Image (cartoon, rainbow, N blue to C red):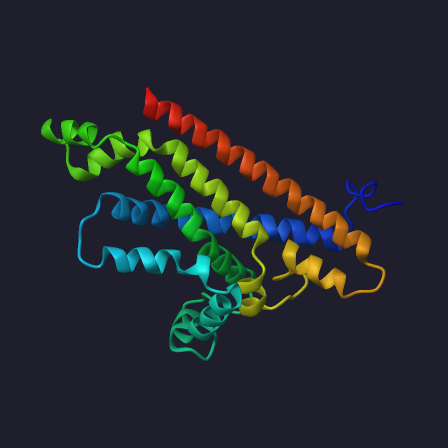
Length: 235
């Protein structure tokens, strides 16, 4: 039977890779979203020395080879690195763990998340924020009552893009946490592993189809949210 005919039937290793990818992508998105909103707001509304440097640092993972990002993460968070040792003492370990896969996925998806949220915040009319401030609202209250609600579709779009990128991250992940079955073998890593095994083409094809489906749904959701944001801005 062809791989397409078997697409609905994933084996134990394939289900394990899918579950781990969903877990990694969920935590990568959840934990990076608050920081992404803060950074996007700084870039959209902030006027401070070093703003362009921050912008470059945020977008660096988009232009660096993923292997380089993974190597830098390994050098920073490995058990022999000072930071890695300090975190290990409080029970936080990233290297060769699924938590490291989540960290790598978060780093690689962060620029896409920030960019979508930044564009949404920039689309909010500053006069609305100024009006709220003149009524006595603090900056924090203006952000939570005016800026964030109006930019919410963009925030959700950024989260969706970050999640999709986390699901598909490979280079930084395999460099940082290797390809350990049941621990760090996500969908892309599993596809790579199956391609190295004779007779495992069917499993690889099934995971490719799952990856394409997830990416397609993410893009459709992102576009729908972007259109909703555009309608809100025009209104």
